[in-house]
Image 1 (tube, rainbow, N blue to C red):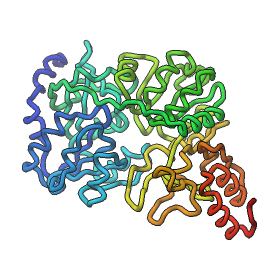
Image 2 (cartoon, helix red, strand yellow):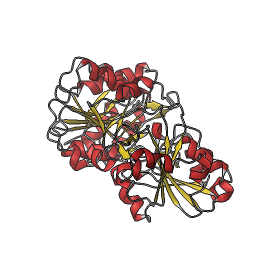
Image 3 (tube, rainbow, N blue to C red):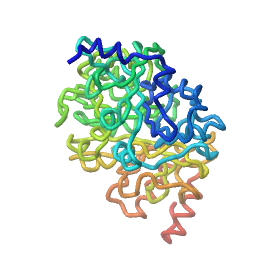
Image 4 (tube, rainbow, N blue to C red):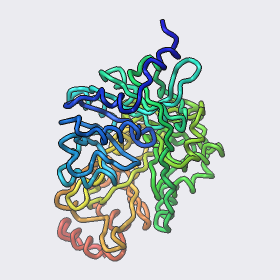
Length: 434
């Protein structure tokens, strides 16, 4: 067998040469968030005239999506299961595609659509054994690196070397491109007073020894500030953000009571600031694993007392949640919300929490609504949410009738909208609320 250093040198090419191996009609999947291979994607855009009908499968980009500019779609067409600021406009204008999919089924869905021709990834420089870490955004990569006909890697020394099932050997990569690029950072949200109140209510539902799933944004960031008195917490989450770092360092999160992955914090990707990336670098206490493991409800449920905290765009009086669509337009995606809500419900002692501000658009729109908007979708069904939390309190839905649910939800709606919600309640249940 050849020494891995010889293999590395043989497969080291220019970015232009690497991208030239992508052909018209290819199905190309890309690492996302901080592990995005920017040099490869930018070169694809520069070489767009080489391509016709390339399908680009992508999740969430933290950079400029040059493949979404008008006219690019005939060369490179975006397909995503989660939309962000750089992609939702293009999809709304018909220049890209949205694919509804539970996140844990993403690798399976790509196979069902014909599999992959090319996988584009970012990796750290190889260690002394020839292994590279795929950084902090691995989700589908370990599962599909062996399926793709060609694997092209951008070797980026700025990428943190994250532990877990995140490694690929140099011999598994067909073409290597060296390109040192800074990792995009997501600055922590400025926590509003509304988010602080929501975070406090959510934290009141967390007990010592619980295993947490947290996302990113003002509400999750607010939740963690109220967990500093909790003990022996576990972390099994789709996404890790800055907020968990201090809890882990302080020992609030130590994963001692978990039934699986005991002693380890588990995620499938991470996004935040350099503080988070430096913490993850070469840290054996934090592991990334494939999304079909981390997000699978059967895996999630193997830990007891799983607390899943998610958010949404609106909740109706039955407890149905729309987390994806705004004014009839696909805004984000299913993501891992349903994966973790179902996993929490299957967990012994688990709790599924939906947390959201009571209003939007500077207080002019209620997020607790009689009916979901026309054109909206039910992301999470009414039988799956245990608690809904706003800045006005906690509505417990589990075990409640439709009438009881509506009362609970009206009580945590913004006062400016309670009367119209009560009117709908009276029409529906033939009973007036005081």
